[in-house]
Length: 270
Ligand SMILES: NC(=O)c1ccc[n+]([C@@H]2O[C@H](COP(=O)([O-])OP(=O)(O)OC[C@H]3O[C@@H](n4cnc5c(N)ncnc54)[C@H](OP(=O)(O)O)[C@@H]3O)[C@@H](O)[C@H]2O)c1
Image (cartoon, rainbow, N blue to C red; front, side, top):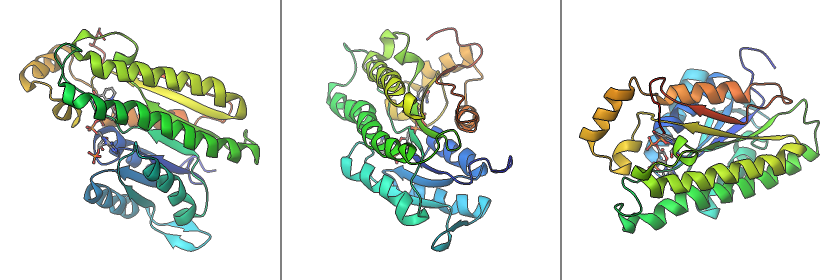
């Protein structure tokens, strides 16, 4: 393992890679040598990113010859069939199992239990909670088998999960979204306790405000969000989150930064 390419023997699976934090994670991990499986529902976006990753960081050597650095699995990350296809894609395309899984796909929702759009509750819960739980279950099963058959101290395995500061501190202003991140935070910590003893790091990343497509998707009022940005700014960028994740997964296998809160310096709450 060279210091320039510390992830050159690893495959990362990233859900929600067509925008924002997921896209930035793909670029950061590929810059460290990783091969990447990209997922999101907008196929054309991940196709473009896959091409960019190969152009920028080069083809990769596999047991079937040289291959593009990234492969795409479009679809809903909370569907069992998409999750199976993402995990299979690593073997099929690169000839090795993925051992760096990033549960990033997710969405926000403006408003509280009292005021948010009830028509969006089920789809948000499916993406943000069930999608993450299903990925932990399926990827966790695969990682357990992988670690049982190799020396974990020479081969780190990572499950990185995007929580949020609103999954740690109650924000009445986006309480339905916050409740999904409370669930994610608890799933991540439980998985860490269950999988850590087998040499699998489960890392929870809890960002505060990151400027991305998230705000528009959640339906935040641009005027009031603009005021928050002015108060707390400069707010975080997707690259800020990706850089921290890149640091965590390149630590020695016996070192685990398991629970990381990242805020813009001036954001006092949440
Ligand atoms: N931005 C923030 O302030 C902030 C703060 C804390 C935590 N987070 C968390 O960070 C993660 C990424 O957020 P972001 O800021 O990067 O948001 P973003 O810019 O809106 O990107 C969200 C990504 O998730 C994908 N996605 C959404 N639902 C999906 C589904 N069902 N299946 C597959 N992909 C799906 C979207 O792609 P498609 O539409 O193409 O599927 C997109 O690539 C989320 O879990 C979010 O809750 C964000």
